[in-house]
Amino acid sequence: MFALIREKPLNKLIIFLATGFYAGYIPIAPGTAGSLVGIGLYLLLNGLSIAYYLLIISFLFIFGVYISNEAEALFKKKDPSHVVFDEIIGMLVTMILIPAGIGWLVAGFLLFRFFDILKPYPIRDIEKRMNGGIGIMLDDVAAGIYANVLLQGVRLYVG
Image (cartoon, rainbow, N blue to C red; front, side, top):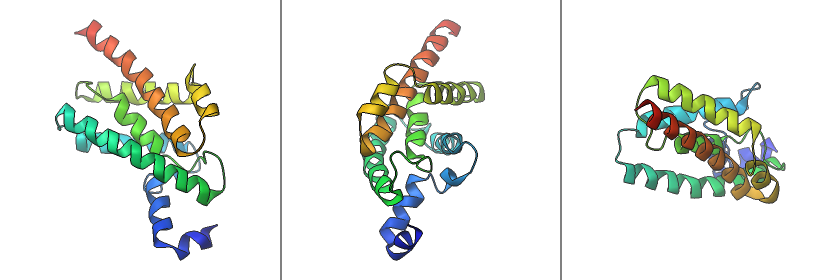
């Protein structure tokens, strides 16, 4: 498999991006490592207007469907654990319209990981029913939406 990746520069790029700049190769909790990469990207993007932020998330989601699908084919495995681009996007979704601040960021990270690991209804169904890149990406976006809704509720309550 790695010989195939070495032969084609595009395959190398797909693996590099799909694994979150190789964070997905961390042997323990690769999804958590990918989520941390998502925090880094969030920190780069959080000063943008909401319109640009959502536009970038939309583009990255579509791009993520493509590279996750390609990576799945390269790894010859359904939803390989090394592929963490979906966690990166899930973290970005989690933080939509959440105030800046370390407390909010830590809460978002913990809630996203909770929902991504637990996979409450219908997240588990999305993961099981959707194949390829779309399935890989959608379950993490759904976990991000769950985390975001909870954070928005806390934000409204706290004021």
